[in-house]
Image 1: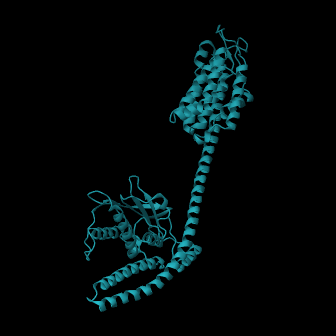
Image 2: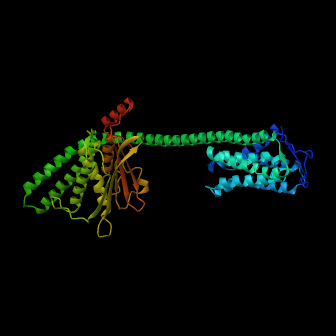
Image 3: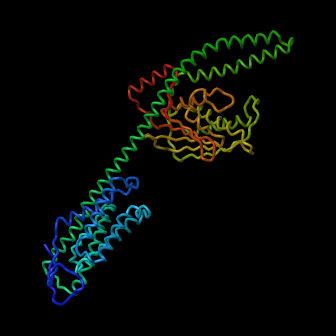
Length: 504
């Protein structure tokens, strides 16, 4: 197949030609298509991800093949045309710098590379034939066409292919000034253009599928990583639950054994106080100390029993905002010294910021248990902020908003204070029994909070805010979770043993 044109007048004689003087012929060969098409595909990967385009041994091998291919083109006629050698060198440099250009200009780098290749291809065929439209090097346009197919979408690939075809067809105008286009040449010219578009669509289809597969593999890897993380977390929670079960059983038995002698000691101290009356002031004072300390130990035993007692939450649709406001008022009155006993000294005021989303639904809660949990968290925040040297103790921020967590709809509650925060080494263990940052206390409060939240099939986590202070985030689902039979039996066993696992 060839494009034949007849020459009515003397034309340009400065260019060398391998065809007879009266005609210029170009043979379309499979080798030419395969060679140039392969050279376009191999030097670049069809993915724009920088991580997947690292230079490795395979890239080095393809680069060597590409350089050999350019060297072969340089050795083919016309060998003495120095413009051709310079253009081939420029094409090689553009190909080598393609990745860097795209990385340096993420938005327009691909356009720059394709435009450079179209320009160099257009100049190359002008210097490799007596008539540019009949140059044997016309398949060099496959280089920008395939590059566009690898990096761009279907419509943009069609645009760049059309631009490359227009650049090639632009040589028809100077050819028509000196030559006459025969009717047989038009189908061959159209065939060449159609092959440009065919190669573009085939390569683009392959590139799109490759990118889709890469995205699927990346998403699968992310899901596997997330699954592994959750599995490790579940294993840690299972080990923690075993420890809690044993500790809960021990605490329950120990609390019962301690409470009985405490009752005897308290009763004996009260009887001693009544008999001594005013006869011995020192003995009466010591008896009072005994009674006070016994009361403190009794409160401690009560905490142990609350921790060890099986939790049976009975959720009912409740207004979380009203419950929070009630808890905030109770704690504010307590720290303002408005307790009925009048024994507590007033503390520095805390500025409370409320940020409630509008239209919050009712949340299934056991109000008495959740009030106990919220009181514990809010009171801990107030106590953490009391040591600040300022006119007010600090700022306590409450955020409530609807969220979707692990495909479950629910309400998220964030309690943030401006205190010292939770030390990094205690953040993973803060919900374990006997772990506390206070100078006084035994560290059972947050463990009980964790049990209450878990009893509602929710989650709780703690982190430190960027500006300082601790942030407790609680999640309560809007619907009761349906557990598998095996999980329900396992929870039942934990409950019988006196502890419940914490779900984070």
